[in-house]
Image 1 (cartoon, rainbow, N blue to C red):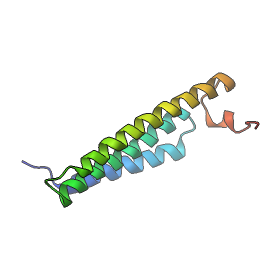
Image 2 (image 1 turned 30 degrees about the vertical axis):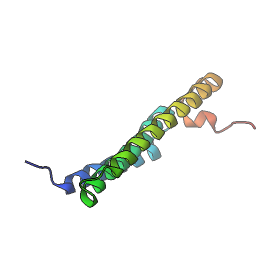
Image 3 (image 1 turned 90 degrees about the horizontal axis):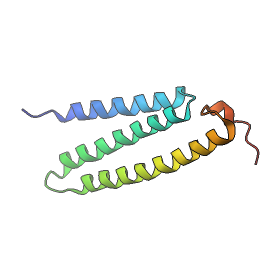
Image 4 (image 1 turned 90 degrees about the vertical axis):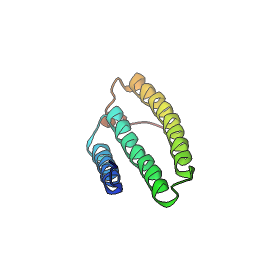
Amino acid sequence: MTIPVELYFVVSSLLFFIGVFGFVTRRNLIAMLISVELVLNSVDLNFAVINRILFPGQLEGFFFTLFSIGVAAAETAVALAIIINVYRNYHSDQVNSIENMKF
């Protein structure tokens, strides 16, 4: 029994819109980072599914997915370092606390 391709796109779009909604509505920096990761995961799922549809015997979409996962891991490491520095300086992980940053 195979899963229809449309269901992969439904799951991907749900991940994308949940991520966008979470990013727009949350004020916590960690929750916003998790929301960005959901959006990136939906893109990775689209890479893999579109590769399976257009080029069933080739692996370019999967390599793009692996590259995207690597970039997302690096982005997460940098974002966590920034969040830790913000928490050390402002003793809060809320976006409201960093609106008054001085340059």
